[in-house]
Image (cartoon, rainbow, N blue to C red; front, side, top):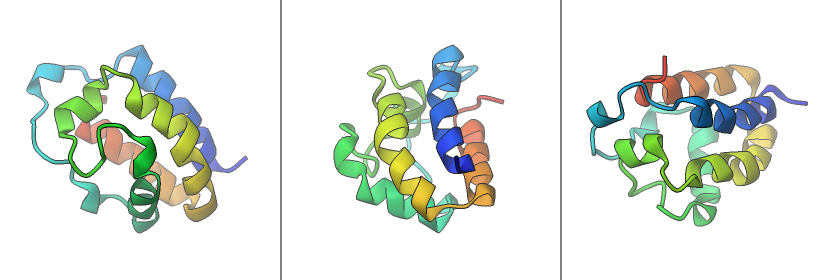
Length: 106
């Protein structure tokens, strides 16, 4: 099993376990998607139709808090298939760091 698939299987569990340490401090600004590896940016756009809030319009706070469990469902089901075929281990680690830093989960 590729690292990216494992990462995407673990992310929903991590998010459900605690999520952001201080959700009120998360800004309501657009996601800095340009900071992600290109393979992830491509998959986010390709699979955007499966993410109800729209990855291009959701703000950092709503993305990280994920009250409707949209991110958790999306990452486990839609993104896993795409990133497993397009991204390598290093890109998966970089994306995990992006998520943890963005959502203040570390």
